[in-house]
Image (cartoon, rainbow, N blue to C red; front, side):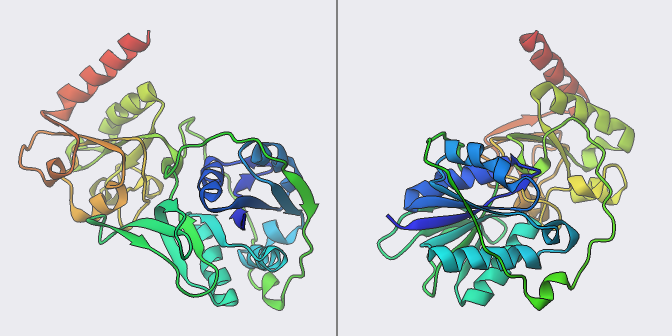
Length: 320
């Protein structure tokens, strides 16, 4: 069976959930070979093997932390040349998409971004994408070179499938451009204790109807009762009610959770583009004609200031 390269997103050896999802998808089209780079790369092996990696290629060097993107592209290209894979899968983060695009250009291959599903085809892997602000689904195949595919978080369930996970050192030669852009400082984000927005299984978002920064406490309380991440519409972000890092939409972050709850969000196309692939969508809005109701699985016509606290209380009661 052909091998499939999977780029590992990890923090000091702790593998992030989107990578484990990629391993599930990779097993549909071949044997996963993981590529782990940077500090703690070797520590990823156990988790990767547990989820199906037959081999783990590792390389640790200061360049991965000290410089932007290019060293990782150099390493992934080295892995590609060593393995000759049937496909290369990369998490669909901002950095992941840049890495994938640069790699595809170097190896002369086609690229598919933001896939939400992947299956084997007679002529190569077939990816499903949501396009035109998620109004259509397409099934796409790369026709030139080795497919380079980025996959959105929450596109597949994480499945354990123990494999050998043999660790091998990857030989990497950094090019002249690898040290072209240096990282001069890093400031850690303040932890809220909530899941990362793009990776969360549940997202609760607030919009213009929240009517003020102080009222986002209602959204946060509902999110905390569900163990969810907090999102915001562009209108709420532009008004200064919530940080831009939490914006969901075409100019913010794309999310695809199992459950998305939109409170006081009208459903403009810009917002829908960032959340329409969610598995189950619930909207709370006092305007029965709001566009958001056109795409929801469940809709509540009511004042969020009444509905959200009542919902939070009911969830906490049932949990208790």
